[in-house]
Image (tube, rainbow, N blue to C red; front, side):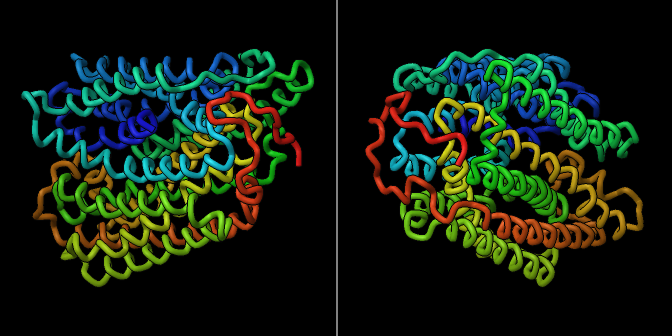
Length: 504
């Protein structure tokens, strides 16, 4: 849980401190792009490989290696002497996160019996909610406090005590587990899937800033071809020696295939909402980073509360209806937010945002914890690492797609409102304007951002409607809740006596 929280915070904490980094390091615009995008690219590209390495060499071993590397990379980020060193350290940090994060879900899946996993996934969902809004808040606080005159550096150095604690506790308490049969790393599969992910995610991450060049579109189209080659190769590899990078047979499990589809769509929603919401508050409304961060606290609390009760109390009684209720609750909060943004305009207050944010948080909490539980509920434990890597990867892909969609649903609306001057995108680019906004936003700019925010939220409602429909493909009840508390292996036993079948 410590590792999962560190990763979630690190994805968002950097944006707030970018102006401070730019001044201190004299970083170029291109370097700033890589400081933010480098982590996401290295992380997304390595997740599937990181998950499979855990299956082969031991999940505890890979987790400890990942958290050690992540902590050292955080130190390198914090002590970077120039922009080039910071970019390289961020790439290393993302690569180490790709080793660490897939092991989190895999260790949960292999350590706890089926009837106990719900409690743990409830806690995991609470951590997801907390991490989602803690990054901007922590970034604002640490940058504003300027601890010991270090300016932006504490946003990375804060990982050092947390990472060391996670490493020491992990060594003592995590039980080693790996796939029972000997597996070998599929190096050709690693090259193919990493290439395909980079070809898709890099143009999406930097497309708007580069003006959506032709090579970016060709690259994304080419990624589909490489993905197809990867799937064909994995089928061949399965027949040849039974040791592929991705177990394609997992997709024969209905709960896994449907859950992956929901995870991808939910990642798309996250990519759109959180970026647009931050720009709306800090640039459109002229709020300080600290005020914007504090506004997100009720959302975070609501996610944590709903995630805690959903898996333990509600899912055993109502099954997938809990997730669908979450999608409807979240949609109601978004619709209320749309109405309030139009009703109060740039004069909206934090208190007026409270109800829609709480509704959205409750809805998200009802989704995130049960969804992870449902996706992994029927996955054989020897493939837990591979499955966990896939879950994290598709969510990252969805988030990248969502960030790409922001240029269409948000910045295009701003350009239209401001007469195509381009002023809007410049204000919101990577948080530079956001971090410096403390009020006094020109009326035309504020109104353009409000209109763009409302337009983006209508897209969020549409995505939630798709999620609601896709959820009908999930099992009516997760397998462990149908069985009650089965005679499963004792907690802490890495391999069970009985394995679920690969095929239904």
